[in-house]
Length: 222
Image (cartoon, rainbow, N blue to C red; front, side, top):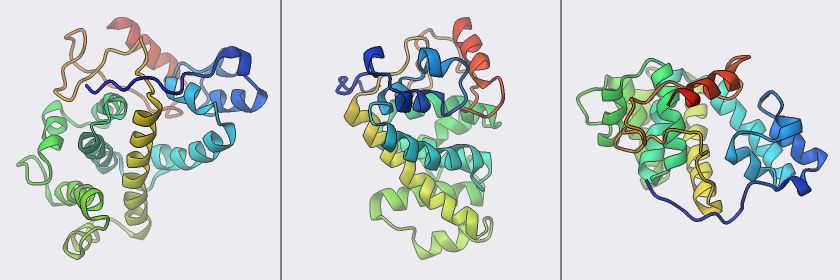
């Protein structure tokens, strides 16, 4: 995994304003307002509360409320993370993809891209859309036509914004030097973990009432 040096550290307690605490608590993590978030990303973004609040509102739609079904949504994020070698996003979205029903073989094939034998037509077009936007900054007419057979207008719009969002987030994480949490059993691009245990499922922030406790319990088992 690429290790970028920390440039913007988690916000120190002496700088925890009410606006920063709003950022900690945005995803509904129990105790975060009082104790800070367990997520390093939230603690770094809290250095700029207005930006963090605006971004989190946008990001929450794409992560939780998107019209795109979970499987293609995770294909998008994983392919984007692979292209940008975004290890923070890769780690978490492997867990989300497993929870969405993807297999480790399918996740591994994301690195191979749209021409891998694992994909149906919709999967392949979804992955190809990522490649085209990141390389040519536009989805081609043939790929758009295939996507249009499987996704409605709102979903097509969410697909484009999801690709852009996770590219932007990956740039920010790498530039700020956000580190993966010490409690995480790091999942590499080879799908091997730091401990050698198999990768495990994870819940998105806010996905369930107990998402934070469930993820913490899984982290303690590794």
